[in-house]
Length: 248
Ligand code: FPP
Image 1 (cartoon, helix red, strand yellow):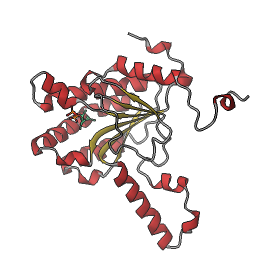
Image 2 (cartoon, helix red, strand yellow):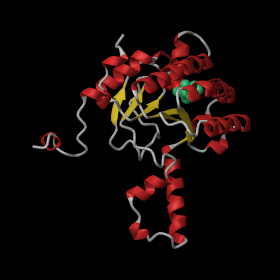
Image 3 (cartoon, protein in one colour):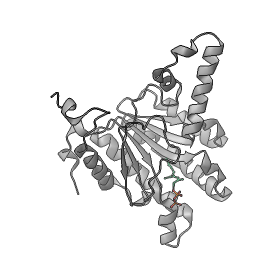
């Protein structure tokens, strides 16, 4: 196992976004119900949050429930919501101890009242935490986030607060759920698919993409370190040439 102390802090992504895919297939391979996969996935969430905090990641965004996921069988949605609630209840102490702030992106008002209440309580109690922000994307869709942002800007224009011709990328960024946070440097997707699935469509414009066959329940500390090490070996050019970046 790669030791965390081997990592060069300058090569640690400030913001990692994660599409946690493959829970259902992991469970099916073991002839177990899909929910068993999600349950094992919660242990991966714990391991990844702990490791990210340990190596100095400042923002970690987990795609926990998409706007499309509401269409899953009722029992699965109910099971996922129960897991989410238990996770939030059990993790508050650890978050406080590790100085982790919990934040939520997406339409959280669509969540069941009991989950929403625990979520808001944990968000409130960890609001002062500074070392890492854990964003849970819940009832989240990138297009939905963008249209809500566009509506906010349209209201400002109609109210005469902003000139439509002055609208900028920065202003749109301020209207997104992730306002005030840096864009992800690294986007990881587990489970073998090579898609964005409506996740952070605006924010991942320049993110490095990392896809792995590993299914989410098997993605733990070592797998995260492997992804971060791969990121560290890549050269991010932001549209410039390699020579420009080296100041030549
Ligand atoms: C995708 O796997 C995963 C999800 C839709 C839910 C992810 C949820 C968790 C890991 C647990 C709860 C989250 C937290 C933050 C405590 P899939 O079911 O689409 O897998 P498949 O593609 O193999 O069917």
